[in-house]
Length: 258
Image 1 (cartoon, helix red, strand yellow):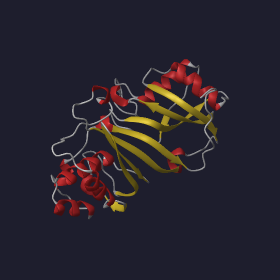
Image 2: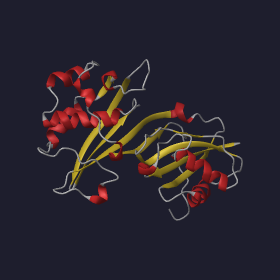
Image 3: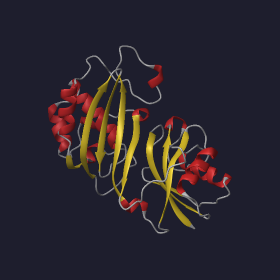
Image 4: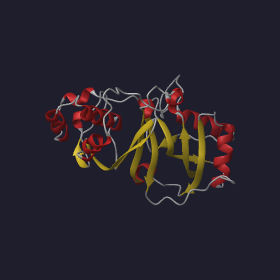
């Protein structure tokens, strides 16, 4: 079997998440079914990020073992032709048969989008959150809250039910807020993220900037304590995986004409 990396984009609105779940539609399940229609029988498809139900991706990276010798661009083209309209394989590449994708991930970047127009935009309904807008937090306050979270911190104060781990430390390396009316978005880069951490941070920053979270609770969160901040979590639909940094991966091979 030969190992390939796939660069995938998908609208997560109609999926139960990345991982295969009995009786429910998943992104990995669609990839495996498409491979079978190409005459391949892969055992699994391992994603760099196990995106939750409703979360989108522009640059998910997945590893899959196939029996045939594929050119990366051809594989991406053929696979996309077998996938449903809400999933596409943008590019692919052959890697060493023992290439450990999960062990080579150096970081991930997520974008969270808000609909902040005077009236809600139906074209943003599947891919953004329309949070409380009165008052609309200004970018200075949002950037200040986000900057306070940079660096390596213990995020156990935002641990979600079902996320049991010994280490909740993550390094937030970059946060950038942008306004492009009627949208606002924030991009967050980190070495890793605990379960729903990005959605929690986004909602906390919004609440802090609006004055809905006290300075004491926010300081406690930054110190790794349990506070009222844990009550805040943004919905999945506004979140998109924008990039995955993979150490040692060759250049992507794109479909002809891409």
